Length: 147
Image 1 (cartoon, rainbow, N blue to C red):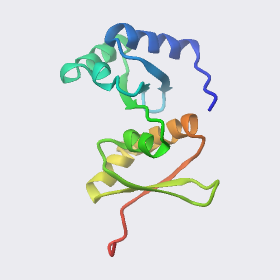
Image 2 (cartoon, helix red, strand yellow; image 1 turned 135 degrees about the horizontal axis):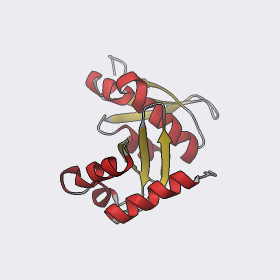
Image 3 (cartoon, helix red, strand yellow; image 1 turned 90 degrees about the vertical axis):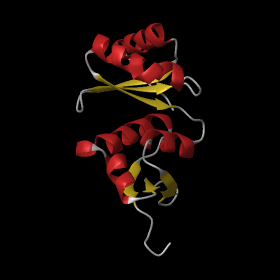
Image 4 (cartoon, one colour; image 1 turned 135 degrees about the vertical axis):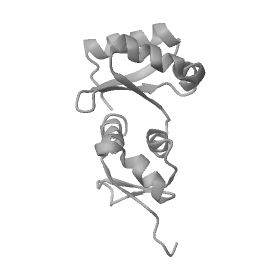
């Protein structure tokens, strides 16, 4: 997927590298929810977060925005699972070859986490899946009761 990273995003990625020694593959400035979403190179998540979240706190102070991080994964299913953490994703279903991808979560409490306050988490998933996977996220569901 082709991703255009602007000057401000590159500056934020460099700021993350300087403060944490971690590598970000991408950075999304989401003005709607007043946050910066970093996609962190696989294996660098611990470095990026820091002890007790210290690096995230420092970065939030420097940038003046809420910071969210998602660990990249090569397989789209693994990447989607990472995006929705800490909600527990149990399955991913695609409607045909070109339809949206629906996400199944384990239990009702995971449903609220996956959607997020005012839909912020599902919106993050939609942005990142468009940029990295080339498909849309549809809905988040609980598994059927009889399953």
